[in-house]
Image (tube, rainbow, N blue to C red; front, side, top):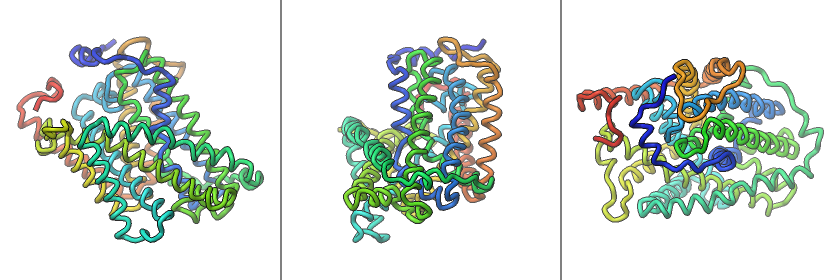
Length: 448
């Protein structure tokens, strides 16, 4: 049996383990159910038609394999950092650093795609802004406002996220609850079997709707009895989100029929308009807008800290580690992050950015599944009995094979972009190691 490094354990021992199953499951649902579900039903229906619900089920099975692997790793590594901590504990700082870079790439492409969706939702409500200039103004206003709020203090950013989180699930629940009575049962249940190639592409896109667990597991060092809490919370959250997603798809399909794939901007709003009139349509568009803004607000609150940390440790220019003298926030990192995301949101569509984000997160999941195997092989333990069941050892290899199958449906361009980012990250890591002249495995966090 291998224990975690004593220094690392001592640091995390200072944290309060207060997150239980309900709290962690709620955090996962909140991180998973975002703005993408307001648009993805139409994008999947456009390629799969009546077979779209099958793709949701297949994606749920894939995610069940992935989260089982995460549960195995998470029950053995109860450190703050989530997936990054699992990979680093299994394979060391270099692979762990690449895992962190993949997380960052996922973050910027995801939030940029959601801002594109936000802009599209706003133009549905305000058609006068439906232009390139309008998209720039909307996206610039979003990132500018959130950068200003977060530079002025983390409390303001936290308040904005909290307020939006409370209300973002309401439109989806009402859509399913009310729309259920207006579907034509035969149409909603007219589910076909997809072709393997189309299914693979559909699942690749749908990963965007299911991803988010990696964000919610970051505070692992504050989870009570992680060997019990992590597995139960992720299965509960996966079950709830899968049920909600399939019901949303079937209600939309049962109302819009074969036209669902035509309304790629606001499919749920179009379906709501069919049974609740203009008020229902506008309510769902507003819901998509609020949910998108909530996702972006949550991301801008946390993800720029990655740039701050990389600047602090001299992997990126040290100016990124600048702290505002009055507000005590990483102002340069926040503004830089928002500028990068704004540029991406203006240059690509939601679907393009969603798939690029999925390629990054799937590679990260691949590393975590491999980490689960390695941690089990070395019998690394944190506190409590590790999560296990008869035949558990076979789950990570199956998950790895399935992830490779899904990745095979990505384009060469998407792999090229991810590969370039990882190559640059590797050079930065090696340069930093040479510059310091020390072994990074023994480097103290934050020392730069």
